[in-house]
Length: 104
Image 1 (cartoon, rainbow, N blue to C red):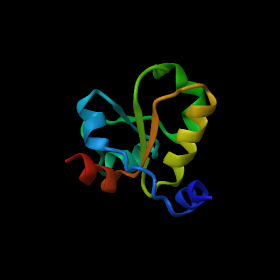
Image 2 (image 1 turned 180 degrees about the vertical axis):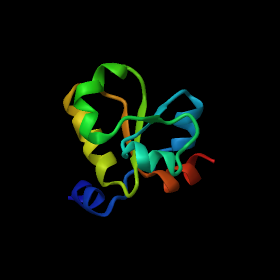
Image 3 (image 1 turned 90 degrees about the vertical axis):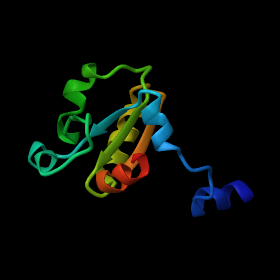
Image 4 (image 1 turned 60 degrees about the horizontal axis):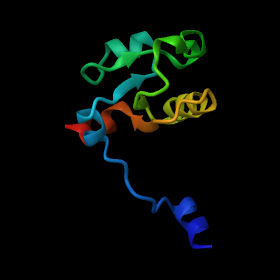
């Protein structure tokens, strides 16, 4: 029962995105190229969500990947898709501005 409440209210341990980046995590920005050009996290890879399936070979299944987008919706979809393709070290970083503040 307590685990159900943790899932619903999000009281699971917070992901340390700054540490993941220090350890070599890849930041995968799934926004459009136009959105990416307007601003992005340094060294992030831009691979739009609608192209992810066709370019998945550019990613390594054993690397830690943090997905991000504008608000967190597309990054969540990207994280779910990558997990369905047997990527095991996937973290949804949510909106890129928020993620940038977490890794600064």
